[in-house]
Length: 177
Image 1 (cartoon, rainbow, N blue to C red):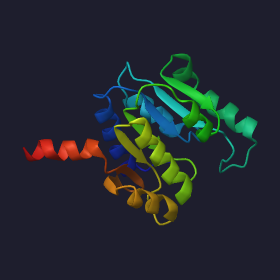
Image 2 (image 1 turned 90 degrees about the vertical axis):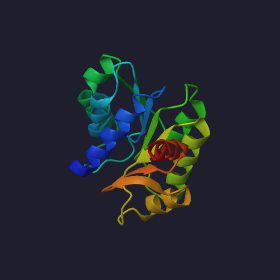
Image 3 (image 1 turned 30 degrees about the horizontal axis):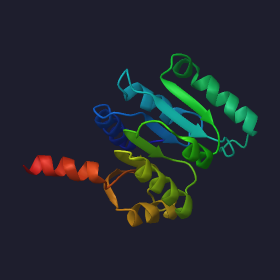
């Protein structure tokens, strides 16, 4: 769940990604709250691909129930083609992804250092313009350490972060010119 200050930054990131080619990829769907926000703010011609293996949830419901609830919450967005729900391990998704480089990758799955770093490395490797995520906070030290080790946060609000990538460097250069 994201707080209002985090939602404002996420909305800005999505709106910036609308001017870029490629989909928005969300790693970690949970119940689809953030997914629905991504779909709300995205351009009409942009797709959100959300990936989760439904192995964890705070309510401790079974994986099948978790996936079923999430699909119900996202039914309209899925049926209308705005969101593509992928029920699979993120590493299997990474290995199988053959689409164009994403405009935005939003990481909010496994919060360990190793997993977050691997997610960021994949997003870099695939050519994502904007790499961002959630839980850049003291309660998830692995996320913060991975973000810092991979270039640091160019922007952050609450726990939402945007990695310092070439995209942000070009934005800062344009403002300075």
